Length: 265
Image (tube, rainbow, N blue to C red):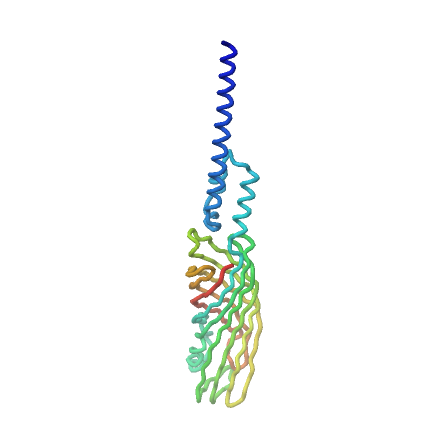
């Protein structure tokens, strides 16, 4: 009888062991299937603990996670365009007639491009470029600066270029549709004005360093392509340019709202 009981206990032990192996195997298959079904970008909204089961091989979890993280879109390349406005006020010593003439030069078209490589799901580095243009002309203008009188016809054609390294911070969309991002750029700022005064041409140029930041959102309307909008602020200034203004420093800080078209890879 003891032999019978021992045999039964052995069989029960083997049955329990087989059942435990079956349960463990089912858990591993279930966890593996769950990981495969997770969208690579949805993964960043979940804690690792949610897919890390105590019955699942830790090395396999890490392997699967590395594969998931390697699938997020690393490149963002885009174009943008819109209207930009110089927000700096005129200096107090600017003659009223000159100030009125310069008003149309404070708003114009802006175009830009950027290329960002994301070294992690949320952080990217790259380059950002933008250009601004405005022009105005009059048949006659008269004003006085520093006891010097200027009178005659005038025409201005202003171009501002800005380029520099950029850092981008983005959110990962839950449904692979909407990206929110914030970019920071510190770079080279070039100002030029092809000025014609009394039929005499002047090429006015100044260089400086500037800072730009933007906040925007991109909607993925097709795979790997987005359309969006962003708010951009650029801070920069130049030194006094002869017959351009009477102040010692010309503040050219600008704000713009632009439409963006980007590809994500």
